[in-house]
Image (cartoon, rainbow over all chains, first blue to last red; front, side):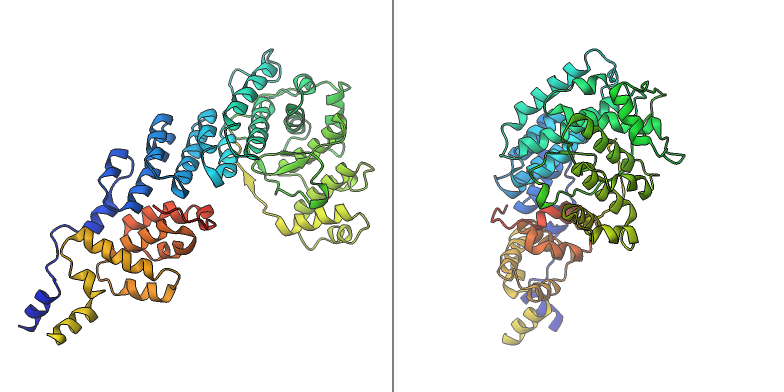
Length: 355
Length: 106
């Protein structure tokens, strides 16, 4: 009797349909299914998931349709971010960037993620006649899309896309001819040298054996045309390398930097040839089997930017507790010390897959 | 009668919300009450415990986490149903949402 009274009073008749269970169970792949969800928050996440799903399939319009059903604000921005990431992963970088510029506060993260999705053009290598023209065309297309975004996003997005595009042109192709990199104008130039150096180091210092002590000099000689540009079979699909933590101390913010693989930055040299040295040092670090000692000869280089880069890479490769690293921390070159300090503090060692 | 009401309120969640027959409106009522407790983790956790249906608990956790990821993402760590865990990944798997402090809410 008491149980019956309790049941009646508390309205314990369970409804035949559990609305919570039903709402949680909706498959978010279809945008049309989202509309039926009663709760705004779940409807929103359903729409975001639907956009991501469409984008992953390469369906840009589907992603737009889904994102535009969401009210302006945080979740619409997240929706464009997800769509940008997925389209980037699917290799549709221009479409991806058009979402990224609408991702509001997440735009910068989005352009970085999307930019790395740029796939290599199979028919293109550094010896292709139209290589430079292709790079310039890409730059124009990207600029057109990114100019619609927030200030700061365009520069960062372009930096990442160009870095990736030049990486694709050189790295793993088996071709180290510096011709097209030497011709690369303006914003392309430093990225072209980064990519050239990566492929040149790969050829001069194969990963499976210790790097020759004169690796950097050999790369410079190839650049100058003093040494014949080596060639080899293409690398294939595995284009992985050691990740460089993004380190740009306050004191060097005025010196140009360019994006490197996986979100890092490298300093640009004061002259093209100095820049090749810096790019070669960074390429040595990308090479996972390079030991910290490879950077030691450059720790006393008379060129500031070379010395600072070497210090950063030496500290990243050595880690904490190394006496030579400690000596650099206590040295008189304050910027070098800052680089070393930040390298030790911010170091996130690992491998990144730039694909 | 008073005894019945007391027994009712203490056995479930909010007496007011649980007296609603319509499932959607009941969930909405629970959500509105929970929103008032935002920012007080202890009170929110206690409130959740008073709801007996795990799906209903999880729906509430997920809705609050989506409404305000910066404040409420922790609720997603406590969901128990598989479907809610899947949906929560859209929130907890996106650390940038945690940093958001704006008032844009679905």
